[in-house]
Every structure is written in structure tokens, then in C-alpha cells.
Length: 148
Image 1 (cartoon, rainbow, N blue to C red):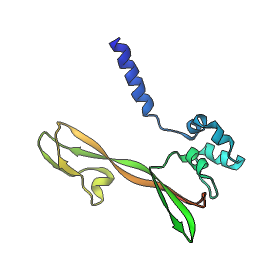
Image 2 (cartoon, helix red, strand yellow):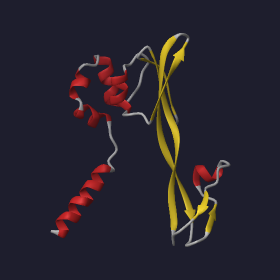
Image 3 (cartoon, helix red, strand yellow):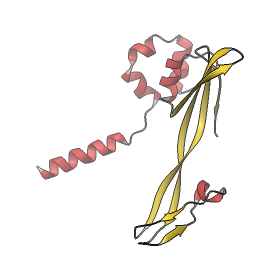
């Protein structure tokens, strides 16, 4: 019984780490995909964004945004969706030792990782950053950008 429980737990953890793809999102919500125009359906299947797309098409193509902002541009309703990713930050902390420094993006751009550590090995933390945004005006994509 313990082996079965351990295998099920391991399986659930492994499944939760699988990234969401446009194809997986389409399979989860086929009615929303069917309601899109043929041009939007082609773009969504490739995971691409284009001016004039609906929010539902963007959700299927890129997934759920991390942050949503509402506002106004030139008297029209506007919304910005931001998508995030994370850089790993490696630190060496030892039991009761103060650590300062880090590697990668976070430690090399004026924002060194530091803190009081309780461990016996290197640790990894993740520094989030905005890697893409989509701007909607009157409920249609007006512009988008993606970090390369």
C-alpha cells in the first residue's frame, strides 16, 4: 500500500510539472476553440498572437496571464496582460551563515541575492520577470511584445 501511495504521489507531482501547451488548452475547452474564426484557430494552434485577436484566442494561444491591468488609451477601454517567467538564483548558504551574492541574471544586474541561510548546500530561488505582454483595446489585441 505504501508503494502504491508513493507511486501515485510521484505521478501527481510529475503531471503538475508539465507545461500547458496550446493543444492542451484547446482540448480542455473545445467549444471556445470552435467559436474562433479560422484565422484565429490557425494562430492559436501555432501559439502565435496577431493584432485583432480576441481575448479567448490569446488565452488558448498563450495561456492565463500572471497579471492583468485595466486602463484607458485615447478614451477607449484598454487592458494589458503580462506573462512572466523566472530566472534561477543560486546561492551558497550554510547553517547559520549570512549569504551574499548569487549567479545568473539576478546577481549580475545590481540586485544581488542576500539573506540569512539555514542549510548545508547551495539553494535555488527563482526571480520572476515579465517576458511578454498583450495590449487589448475594445476587447481586441492592439499590440503585443515578447522577450527574445
